[in-house]
Amino acid sequence: MPVYKAPLETMRFVLNDVLNVSQLSQLPGYEQATPDLMESILAEGSKFCEEVLFPLNQSGDQEGCHFDNGQVTTPKGFKEAYASYTQGGWTSLSADPVYGGMGMPHLWNLVFMEMICSSNMSFGMYPGLSEGAYRAILHHGSEDLKKTYLPKMITGEWAGTMCLTEPHCGTDLGLIRTKAIPNGQGQYEITGTKIFISAGDHDLTDNIIHLVLAKLPDAPEGAKGISLFIVPKFLVDTHAANHVTCGSIEHKMGIKASATCVMNFDTSIGWLVGEPNKGLKAMFTMMNAARLGVGMQGLGLAEVAWQNGFSYARDRLQMRALDGTKYPDKPADPILVHPDVRKMLLTSKAFCEGARALSYWVGLHLDIAEKHPDSIKRQEADDLVALLTPIIKAYQTDMGFEIANLAIQIHGGHGYIREYGVEQYARDARIAMIYEGTNGIQALDLVGRKMSQNYGRLLRRFFHPVLEFMTQYQEDETLGKLVVPLSKAFTKLQQATIQIGLKSLKDPNEAGAASTDFLRLFALVAVGFMWIKMAKVAQDKLIAGDTDKTEFYQSKIKTARFFIERMLPEAESRYRMIMAGAEPLMSMTESEFIA
Image 1 (cartoon, rainbow, N blue to C red):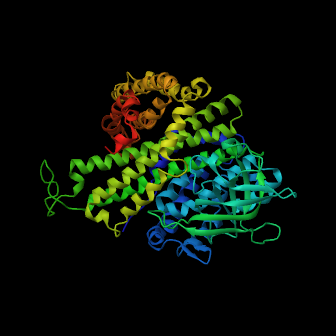
Image 2: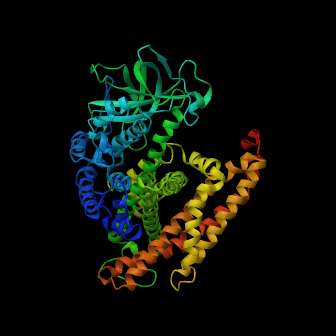
Image 3: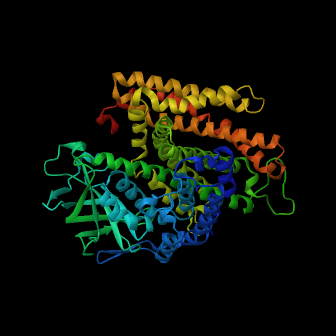
């Protein structure tokens, strides 16, 4: 049977010691966000995830959702779990108090999201989609729309979705065909079909508020002609059905307890969100929130996969250690003694803890960008969040799948069968690399938009603090051994940035060819930076004589060393692939592919 325990001690270390999140309570509107309250949130959130959600993960995967007579029902136990979720106030944690939310930091929500994704990713899809829809209405809806929809979305009585994809178009949303016809009463009749709609229909809430991309009759061609509409499943004033139906649910590789629906809109009544033909801006509010959430899915699944890999490695007896017997009282040594198994486990541990620190760092800046009284500080924080969002989404989901596969490998044959549960993590993790913009799209966003935006201003938000940190500690007796390799990788990142910029001026394919390798190079440097920051804090704690947690702090320093010496060297190969340019990719003709 699989296991999961929220990594609270490591979470506290990152939040309190590395990031000093107590600073959030100094921001206007966050006065109540004290460390004591955060500790309560961590304790209660972990208890809910471990005791309510995690026990439903395997059973939900095995049962899946049901589709009968146009209605979707979730697996056994999900409806009761959702009721407990809403009663606990989790849907309102970071929501605006004006509409009934608690108004707590976004970072706290991000931390809770990690635990949800580890314990039951399918369940997390339902409130996760509602969160994206809530944010789009909050930032772009009229005051009347906010008052109508947000209070019950915040309580969890109503859910939300994002209806973007159509059968003939995914990433290229300018090709959508769903129509919105004004009916002369300040409303629109929405007609069209959307596919791959997560949580498109279910039995968890009284109503589902769909946010639908559609085109007005006089809309310009392409992405400039997209508008966004609220289309509730049931009309709010009359409670009548709104001609919104689920045509079918998909039979998927993973996240089987999350309903992925084909949604049909047949002259459904909708309300415009924001300005006509400006739906793309509102859509990106949803997408950016969702992309950070998907990044947490990658981290959450990696964490639970690594925990199960480690648990198995301690118990599974196979052969003897290469340097001599370690457990003479047993017929064989645990596989934890073997170097290759340790490499897989340390890769998993180093990723999870490094990515957690990076994610929480971005979450902290998400709150600074919204609440800081200094407009310059808000802009700087917003720039950093914008820059690192595609990196978190792509890198953490790539690695989430990789770590899940490592857990299967550690389990051997037992990993390939259902009983031990780890094969589900690989199946569930695979979708996160695809939805909310494939990871290739994230890389293009980084190279094509974020890298050059405002003459490199976003890049400077990251480059400057990293350079300052390395300069400060490169001569440190202990940290210097870690800083020097990071400095070399950072130099490669700077050089790659310049080369991509120069080459792509002559040939746009150069940026496309380099994009995924550049994103990975960037991610390695970013996580390496966070690891050395954690090692610095751990070293300071040991010097200060914090002997109660000596083993914990030593573990951080040793894991930092593993990342820098065994994982960061990938940066060199990524740099060389970037420097190879587009020609090896683009020179082959179509006919030569099958020659």
